Image (cartoon, rainbow over all chains, first blue to last red; front, side, top):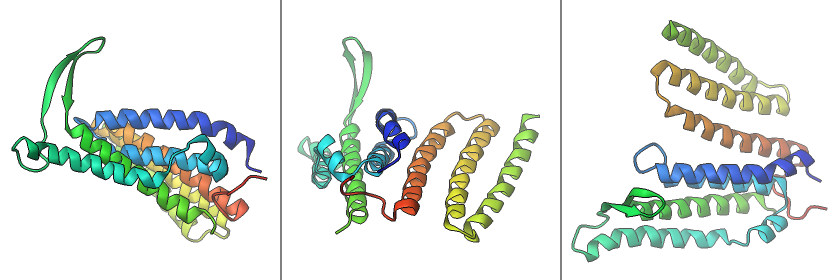
Length: 138
Length: 93
């Protein structure tokens, strides 16, 4: 019953928005961006899927329980904080290092990306849980 | 030169923002308000573009892109709510 234009546009736009959110996520270490806004963008892309199709189709396309993303993200964020404590540093202390990877070259890897991934999962799970609870009837 | 032009265009965009806010508050019908809110989002994007030219900072373009994506989702949701009365269908007939 929905518009054919919306249904046709929704899936390519999903890939565009998710790739842009991955870009924003990895850029967040040194530039504006990070886990919060990347999760919000991904939630916006999935909201567009919920708007263009019905919830049954979205559930069969993406078999993901959004509520389970919240504890996964919280455990990731907590684990990134506890990792520093195990080595004798204060809670939530992070470290980074430059590594040489094949095909990519020299790359700066930081443990703050684990915390950011946790924030990403928590924001995505919370936004989509709230929206699917409010938007769905009964 | 570019400073003067961008200042004048910022003032003009702010004036158009006031007109859109007036239409969004006292719109006679609901579609008027929806279109006014969508236009406010577009004017925000234009203001960010002019601002980044004025300050010579390319970092603002990403926030313009994010506002465009979120405002598109919001406008689609409002339009579907106006037509069908609910945003998310359980089952398409």
